[in-house]
Amino acid sequence: MTGLDDFGAGDDHRSALSVLLTAYAEEACLTPAGSKRTRGLLRASLISRLLAEAAWRRFPEHAGVTLPNPVFVTGLPRTGTTALHRMLAADPAHQGPELWLTEVPQPRPPRETWPDDPIFVTLREAYRSAGLDGVHHMGPEQVEECWRLLCQSMTSVSFECTAHIPSYSRWLSEIDWTPAYRRHRRNLQLIGLNDPGRRWVLKNPSHLFALDALLSVYPDATIIQTHRDPRTAIASVCSLNTRASAGWSTVFEGAVAGKAQLELWSRGLRRFRADRARHDPGRFIDVRYEDFVASPQRTVESIYDRLGVRLTGPARAAMASFQEQTMRGTGKPAHTYQLSDFGLTPGDVDRAFA
Image 1 (spheres, rainbow, N blue to C red):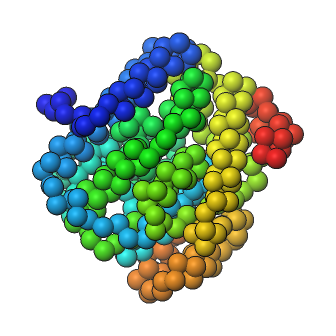
Image 2 (cartoon, one colour):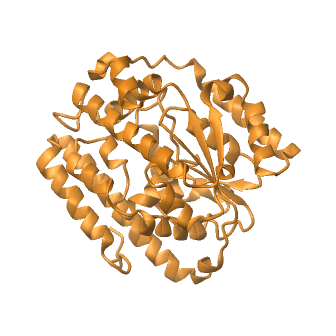
């Protein structure tokens, strides 16, 4: 598909891919549709890796790009991370990874050229038919989670969010994520080549699982952790992930998906708490979901105060515009779910997160 064959030095991604493929074959019970979609996801990750390697050779100057004081937003899924990330990224002094550039890594082209880019247009049409409106809006021009950059190393909890692959989950919980974060950093250096000096703002709930690796690669990073009642968050993430993968598997649904997602995210949060306790408390900013919903602007102001930077007029205007655009989409049908849809009770969640 690409005419490329250089996947880069080392074979960490090959060993990870081997574990992943075995788990899919032996545990996931994929349907024909699920097999096709899963092959597409894996192929897309490998294509992104090839494209990144080719772009690094084409633009060797990327290696000199600095990434000072990046901000990482993390927390349980469905705790306001997306809205907070996009609001922070709206500041003209900031940059985030646009979805299409995480799939097709390259120096960020001038935005006015995107509508004429055939790859951008293809991705825009693909995401319009993704069917997740009312749950999680996605578009190629939007800043998005950076897990796709980790997928180039086949190191991501995203795979177990749409399939029953417990052996891969166990393997992933025991490895060192540092090599994957080094590749993650090189991708940001490449994407931001044309935008020097703008602070990176990134977001991914899976950073919960690899805080030590993240901080070893980004030693001057600030971590924003969002907080929300786990009962609500787990019910919502179960609904999102089963809806995103509906029809892909004969087992990843209902109680099976519920148990797996509860175990995954409770383990991630417990690990993050333990890792965080060993680092400088000044590196972390806590945001309560309820506070952010009640006053997004006040929440952002408090974050800027902690970062020691001024919230400028252009930043305020860009964030206000983002809020206005977001409010336009609130008239869509409500997305309803409850823990019992996934074989879970409030007590199950309380015990898992105790």
